[in-house]
Length: 216
View 1 (cartoon, rainbow, N blue to C red):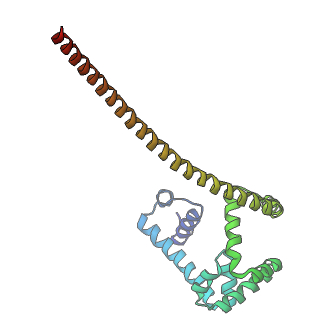
View 2 (view 1 turned 45 degrees about the horizontal axis):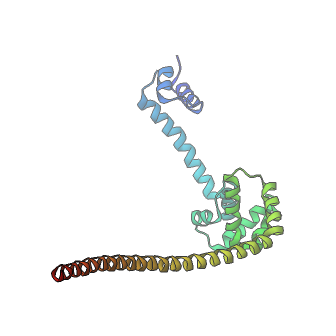
View 3 (view 1 turned 30 degrees about the vertical axis):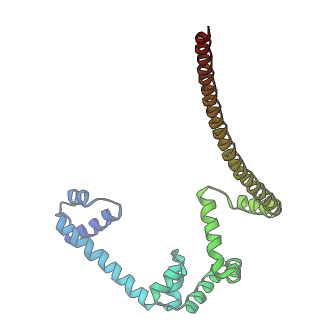
């Protein structure tokens, strides 16, 4: 028969092993409510101790801890209510402590432009490119970029020229269509005149025949 203290230790141990509340209740034979109180007491006290320990740290130590957890400088500044100069100072000190001198020098040199490098990193990561592949790509781009830009400008000029020719062809085609319509109208007029000529010829012939019959 386990004592109360032994049951509490067993509950915490099972919970740390990833057991569910239902599994713990079945194994220890305790109610959900009692198990909840034990866990709340144990982990609540643990969080309070961590908070007290955290509050005893200096601002720089708190900043180092947040940086080590992957927080960004702006997140650290907000969490600790620090100014830009203090946050930057602690971030540089953190990088020095991590023996990341080169990264700190790069950060100091490029400043806010670091966001472009982060974007490049994210893009390369999304397409599963290794760092050496990115370096090779940049070297190739730097070598051939002027040639590519020159070809691009040439293609743009050719595109503009083709677009101009296209507009001219549109105008020419409109003129051709207008001429075709005019010719069609002329053809219709000619056909109409021909029919009138035939009609007049018939009338004239009929008139001559009538006169001929009267004479003879």
